[in-house]
Amino acid sequence: MAGHSKWKNILHKKGKTDAQRAKLFTKLSREIIVAVREGGPDPSGNSRLRDAIAKARAGNVPADNVKRVIERAAGSSGGDNYERVTYEGYGPSGVAVIVEAMTDNRNRTASDVRHYFDKYGGNLGASGCVSWSFDRKGVLIADAEGRDEDGALEAALEYGAEDFSASDGVFEIITAPEDFGAVRDALEKLAYVFLSAEIEMVPQNRVALSDPDDVKKFEKLLELLEDNDDVQSVWHNWEA
Image (cartoon, rainbow, N blue to C red; front, side, top):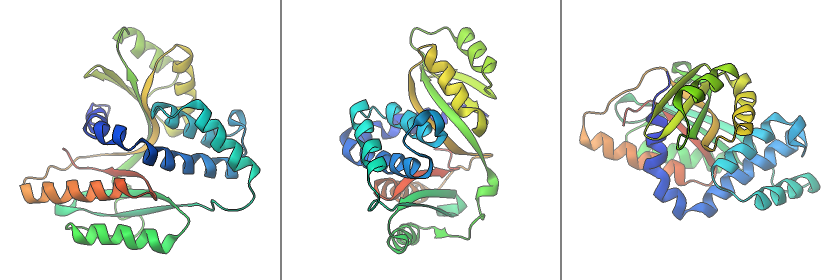
């Protein structure tokens, strides 16, 4: 299952992410806030918070910023009432799309997401219409510079990874969701640096778009979704 498509997507978006760090921090802050509200401010007893912190660290969010968000969430009883919402649908030529959002206004977010799909050749579907064709997995992208591939493979498998691959200067490690935290924590202790670390919806099969117009439409759809403050993650099975 492992491959370098995830890393290619990160590279493709890296320039935009660097230019919009404030927007990235806003999205990650919401994840941290909700995690604290659901499980408390101590990451040692809150796996969701540990995952959110790891994701923020991989996104180069300063530790002081993360600490302030946790303290704010722990000390505030009102405001920031975000809830998790998932949308499923199809892009041009039937490409499967899953949109995970965190919003304080369901109607606004649903309207925006539906508008993007309608405008660029897709349509929203019912819950479960495409998620059956994805597997929920932990995906870790680690910097391979100065690291031995055989040693990295041995360490990843020893701590519970399901799959491993190396390409383009990175190691991609796949885990079961329940093993994600343990594998990540173990490799961090071995001084591996993660460029991305999160639970993802990994497609079982990928779809190529042969029509250049469909490619342009889908790229625009992804751009609008990813630029929306309420949208946390977008998963799809397009073979870019």
